Structure formats: structure tokens, C-alpha cells
Image (tube, rainbow, N blue to C red; front, side):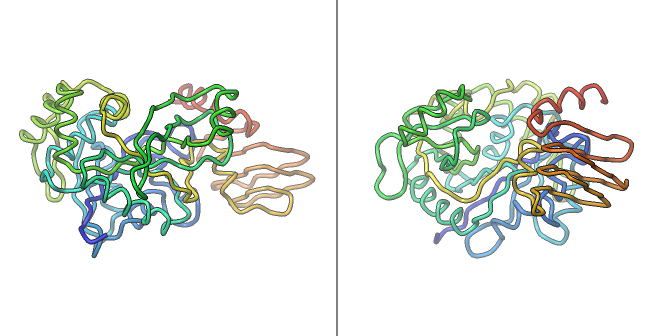
Length: 344
């Protein structure tokens, strides 16, 4: 990579699938769920300001501004504050509206895990070459198993050594379809990581979702600065339809490329995923805090500030956060939102 790329880190989202630890101002991305650093700090560290990357633009809501500043510490960043959630297309449109047309924007969620950063950087270099040729680039994760929790992307014609034209996007599939796609090959998980020239994405948005871009553009123009943060104008931003970038642009544009990469990626979308990535004892238990285990295996126990004892249990999550205690089979981890909603 010879040119500097502008990282854009998406910090929205409440992360309710990781309740009770993730909620309100302590959303998932700001928690140390894998190791000592928060997911947000890990994301920032992946694209360090210097030779290859500019200081990041952080997109977040007003409730998270203080946390973002605290976790950035002395590191330079520009904050773009969304007055209300309007999904990823409008959030990305804010960054596009502010950028020079020639700038390459690398858009990343703030709450993902990437174990192999050199592999990610190699993929970014490939993606940058495609983005300079006016491809809208998405990064696809080489699937390790037939997961029904992710969207898939089918690779079409090869684009030299750099990647492939996207043939089609596939919504989260039933298991049989996921197994079929894995057997066929040429399919990647949709990681929601993008790279494009700002001017190219501006043109694509004006073609495919003009109302979203124009609302974001006006919200930036009428925004107010507070130090390093630009607060987008609420009445203008509220006019933006709420759509994902995939639906608003990527699935509709004729010139979308995918760079497949195996980089130890996880969206850490459930307590089961946290358990899978954590260090385990010989019985497969992942434990943090003051925990006593007896005749138990395959459990995730996060004791918080309590003393937790578990006897004769298998495949269970126990997550303590203040006065809230979550107990469930790990296999039922997608049902956490029910408890989060009930305890709001």
C-alpha cells in the first residue's frame, strides 16, 4: 500500500445479544470480551495511523462520545456523531459526504475480532487496487462451517489476482442451503467490511439511494463542531431512510468486487461465540472471575463481582453483571434479546 487509507469505524449498535454485560453506554464494542483490550480498541489498533492509514473517523451516537474519547486516549481521531440510528447506509453516507472524492475509505464495524491482522492488511492492499479502479469492494470471510447466522456472497469473474466480481448476495440461509454453498465453493461470509473511493460511493448513493445521501449531506453541512466531534444535524439526518449499505447500494450496483480472506474473523455475535474464542480449561470451560467448578464441562462462566459455583453442568452460560444474572444453555444464545428486552 503506497497511499494512505482513511479508516471509518462504525460504533453504533447496542449489542443486546451479549446482555447483560452489553447495554446502554457499555455496548459490546467497548467491552474487553476477548483479552484485556476492548473490541473497539482492537479495531483501532488494526489500522494504526502512520504510513498506510490516516487517523480514524469514528461514527457513533451521542451516548457513546465520552466512551469513544476515553478509549481513544491520546490517539488522534475525528468523531462523526449520529443524532439517531439510521442504519449503516446513512452512517456511511455521513463519512462519504465529508471526504474528498479521491480518498479511499475503509469501513469497519467496531465490534469484530480479527486474529490474523497481516492477512487483513494483505486483503486491504488488494482491495485498494480494485477501489482505485472504481470497484466498490467488500471483504468476504472464507467460511469454516455452514453457518446460518451470516449472509453469503457469491464470487463471479476473477479480477486478476486481487479478487472477484460479486455475482450475488445471499440472505442468511437455511442450513441445507448453507451446506450446499460450502460444498459448491466460491461463497464467502458477508463481514460488513468495505473499501471504496469516496467519490465513487457518492455517485453510487446518488444513483441507488439518493434520499439517504442527500439527507446525510445536508446533516453534515448543517452540523456543529465540538472539538474533534462533528454533530450531524438532527432534523436533516432524521429524513434519511433507514437501510443497510448492502440493501441500499451493494446489492444494486453493477461494479461490486469481493476480496475473500481467511483472517480468524468473528463478529462475536453471541455468548456462544465468546465461549468459542476464549481460553478453555481441559474440560472446555471458559471462566472469568471467582468461579468454582465441579464435574462441569463446556461452560462459559463470567462471574463479574460475584462468587459463582457450578456443579454438574454442561454447555451452560452464566453471565453476571451487577444485579443481573443470565443463565442459559449456550445453544440458546440467540434468545438473549428476550431477557434484554424484558429487563430494559
